[in-house]
Structure formats: C-alpha cells, structure tokens
Image (tube, rainbow, N blue to C red; front, side, top):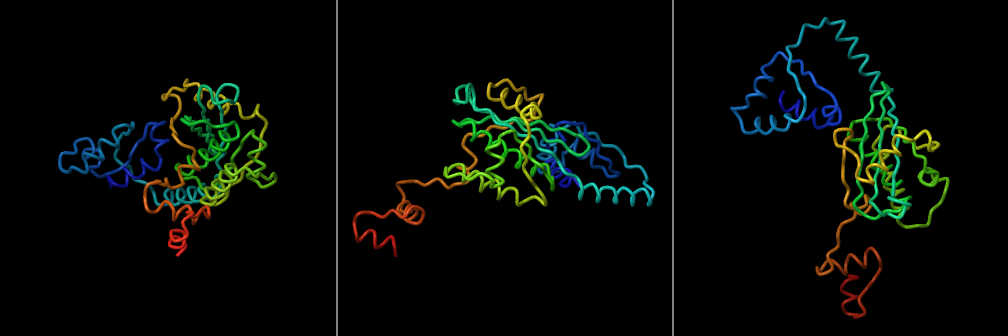
Length: 268
C-alpha cells in the first residue's frame, strides 16, 4: 500500500504539490509512514512523501450502490475529459535571446482545474524555436499528468500551421521539431493543435515572459529548467575521438576518409 501511494504521488505530482491530500485507509499506513522505523525502504518513501501535505484518515463504510455509481462516473470522466493546454514561448528582449528565454504552460481540466508551469531555456533560441519548445513542453507536461485527450492552443501561426502541415518548412531544425511533436502526440488517444489570438493566450504569454526575465516564483508555479534544445537532447552525443565516430559519420552523413583503404573498411 505504501508503494501504491508513492507511485500515485509520482504520477500526480502537480496535484500533490498544489493541493492538500487526504488518504482514506483502514490500514496502519498513516502510522507506518510517519514512523518508518522498520525498513530502510519505508524511510526513503516517507522522506519522498514528506514534501506533500498528506493527511491519513480512516475509511468510512461505502454502500455498494454508491461505489458502483462512483466507478461509473470515473470511467465516463476518464474517457471524455479533454484538457486544454495553452502554451507560449518568449525569446528574451526583442526576440534576440538577450535576457534568456522562457516557456509558459497553462493546463486546464474539464473541471477548470488549472496547473501553471514555467520552463527556463538555458540556451539561445529564436522566437520560433521558443514557440516550438513551448508546444513540446506542454505535451510532455500533459503526458506526465496522465491526460489522454488534449487540445493545444498557441498564438504562433507559423508553428501551428507547420505542425498541422498546412505550411511547409525547409529549415532542418524546424523539421525536427515538427517530427518530435508528431511522435509525442501519438502517445495520446486524441490530440490537436489550434491557433488562437494573442489576447486569448495572455496567461501563458505573461508566464513565459516572466520566466525569461527570471521573475517567476516557485511558490506560484511549477518550474523546470532545460539546458539544451529538446530536439538536441534526443540525439546521441558523438565523441570525435572514438572508433565509432567515422562509422557514425558514414551512416548519417555519407562521409568517408580520403584514404581508400580506410574508406573501404568503414563501408564494409
């Protein structure tokens, strides 16, 4: 039961951080987790759960019909709920990357529950790249929450139209962004991306600009930091001084050494 609670807290971390949590159980779970003196593993779990506001209460009797109705509601809720994900990226002052870049994400459930997430981009990014990073971060955060159906809203016409394949792009970096978004979207039952006017995306826009300026308080929003672009983080780092380097270059770029004997060995 303790492991189940730990896994639940990890899966629903944004909720556990934002709200007090009441655990209903008739076992001795509350006493065990508050006085974990029997097992090193329980001590570790107790420390991990210590950052949340968790209260343990005895479970009251539930009539069979009430439990049946509850399960029916939960099943319908899980199938039909569509979360809205508002995203925006800010590339510093004047779009030049000066002052840093930031991403703002607002996740809203059908019940109007709201999760605000700010992501600091510790690398140089153009306006379009910051907007793409915002879409990717929004999809990733929604997946972490465990959502199955999402609609992403962005005020960037270029990003939305390129992801929807209405606009074409020949820039290699943006092609990689579109491909990554398509792959991430496949993990949901349904997903889509739509363009909205900037005035309807003010919350995500303000959050992104404040994060870029380093003004977001961790007490207000969940915060994350990325040191490299998301598309670069997926690519393996090639060490030039290893025996693998010329083989990888040949397979990925078609490059071969000028020495014919060496080139023949690599091709083989």
